Amino acid sequence: MKNIKVLGYGSSLPPNIVTNDDLSKIIDTTDEWIVKRTGIKERRVSKDETTAELATEAARKALDMSKLEASDIDLIIVATSTPDYFFPSTGCLVQKEIGAINATCFDLAAACTGFVYAMDVALQYIKSGKFRNVLIIGAEIMSKVIDWKDRGISILFGDGAGALIISATTEEKISESYTKSDGTKADVLKVLGTSLIDIYENDKMISRGTITMNGQEVFKFACNVIIETITELLRKAILNIDDIDHIVLHQANYRIIEYVANKLNINIKKFFMNLDRYGNTSAASIPIALDEMYQNDMLKSGQKIMLIGFGGGLTWGGILLEL
Ligand code: UT7
Image: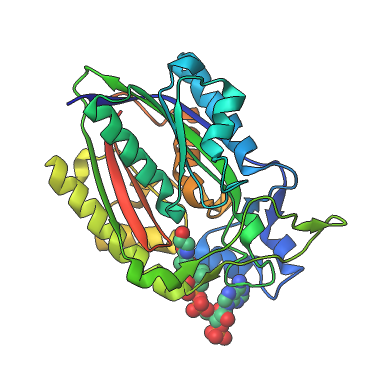
């Protein structure tokens, strides 16, 4: 069995910022309500950027940091539910742009859990010895599938991409994963669509949204499965919570994170948060957070981190990794 090491982080966010006050001009909401109920203050909304473009920029940054050549990459997995095309996959579009000529490429759709599932697939490929260097990307243009007039949804989501390069290593490093799904709850959170729909007409946002959600049911589900995933990962790795340096939850709602911290008696400072600035970027939220943590010098070799995703499907899971 091979061990895993992170070699590079990268992210890419559209420059266009939509604040809560901007949203209060098109729907009946307030900055105060959104901040109190979710912690979100603003989000990025693509005007021109596509999912593949954001994914490519994040990938380039991760590749630069890794010091690998593009031709060293054996596998590219893009976690996305908002691809430019159903085929070719976003993975193949990234491959073309960065010149990863030796890579096998595919997309993986598991909503907001996508990055965790993709990382789990990558871990299994590396541990089996089939692939050595894997580029994992979470990339979403959620703004194109949102009904901007639906205040229960439009306040939550944002666009962006994040990337990680992981590699086989002979160093002793812990890596564990835990993944689950519950298709009986498929109706609770769902979306139709692609990232190529234009939501700006004469510089005004228009609704072409297809996402539907039972917010309260998702909220309760999220709290329960995060606790389950943290508990399972600690059990599998034979560690306790004090051994974990950072917990990076999918960035959905501050209150979900606060609930979990209180319930498990974990200091909230252990949970990295940037949802105030980016909202919920679905499969991209965890790698964007990781890149930001790296840029802020928060990630050190030997630290143990947990990455936990949850979302439509329903799906959930986590990765425990020693850096
Ligand atoms: O990746 C997973 C993605 N999904 C999630 O993470 C969703 C998880 N769920 C949530 O984050 C929360 O359920 C929401 C933020 C979506 C909603 O918060 P809530 O505390 O569950 O509010 P609620 O739906 O119970 O609504 C409370 C009130 C209602 O008014 P009444 O019936 O009490 O008069 C809503 O109509 O707040 C109203 N409301 C709003 N008011 C102002 C709902 N959305 C808004 C809004 N602005 N944006």
